[in-house]
Image 1 (cartoon, one colour):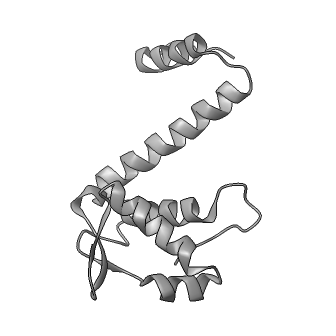
Image 2 (tube, rainbow, N blue to C red; image 1 turned 90 degrees about the vertical axis):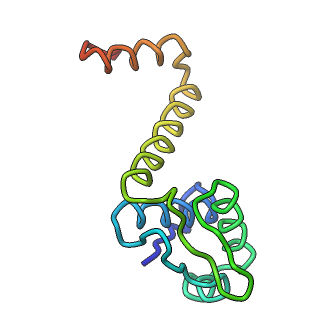
Length: 125
């Protein structure tokens, strides 16, 4: 169900968050569905339970899941199929922008690309 790339430079807790968002966007997880317990998921993935707990805290802070003491964590309405797909796209876009900035693309070039995309014009190559 969850896929973790231990060779990736992306922190494991972020990969868990992304996995949950992707599963919601695909309709596998629906609002109100219970997600695996911290210890259960940590054991399945072979990672430290603190890493899973960190990802759950991050998702809860974003409003994507909620926890009930003694009952577990559940998907919120914020991760319905449409909104989850949009969140994933925005996260990927932010990552692409950060990557572009790291390689010397300036803010004005990024804005020009966005404007051209929305207008159906040519982008900067």
